[in-house]
Image 1 (cartoon, rainbow, N blue to C red):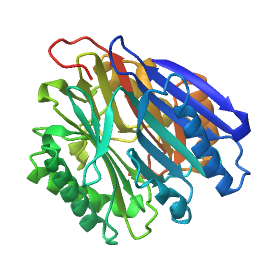
Image 2: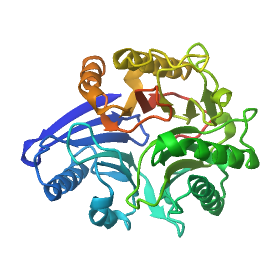
Image 3: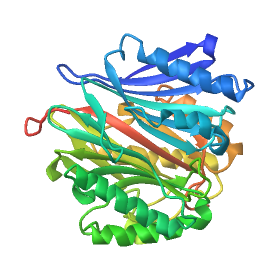
Length: 382
């Protein structure tokens, strides 16, 4: 993985991006854009972010790529709704979640670019990223403001399953990754988990088959009545033999042992690369117990150790990570965690946000995407 950092002082932005390139294959870029001046008015901060996105899209390396995904991390989604709704018509998967950037600014953004692809949206709002052998499907901002986390979860998954069926796909065979945001996670998470588990069973997703890589964490949409919000990624044209579910049993336990239904990580092989999706990972051992309660520094170390164990199972390493998102329960831990990551993993594009994890004792959770070069003639290139 190649890493680059840009600083544009005239618009108070810093950009970290990763570049994955293979000969005769489509390049991929992940970028994190963050602001450096937290004193600017909110309108100025949003203008600076959009200027940075447009400027980045015109840089030489990325100019011929399609912007596939944008996820905005915002400090106050309700009061930013008018600005954020401007993006609803784009041929890009747009995700908006209230998870305040902990550098003190009002907005950060994660961008994902793919070279040599065609992007279009169907009537269900699914972004279809067409490559010669596969179609990559993104559904974002799935929600229904019912003020009931169980009913909302069932509605979201039913509608997502229908959107997949419209593309000739199923939840079991094609869905690779979900992100589920729960408003008031300490209160509303357990019912979301129960409804998801029941729905998965109906779709043939059980501990004897497999689940889906996922992050389930605090987050809000700009409709305060919505308690559950989901983004999802699926691939049409994938063969089940291309997918491996990561367990790292020396470090982690199967999630079903404590009642939740997601994979620790998922690896997807193409002819020219391997995509690795590491779910939200915390300081946990292979018995499902929290390691180092109340100690943020030790929990951070253990979390990265668990991520390394999952990557190793996928024959990858930390230098293959394309981007990571760091979630903290306590805003007071930001400086320590930020300094730790800058010391040990300074080049990886990242954002650190406030978002309590689903179990109160977990002070930190980290998710990441890694990309590794492989050659496998059995499968078509990405």
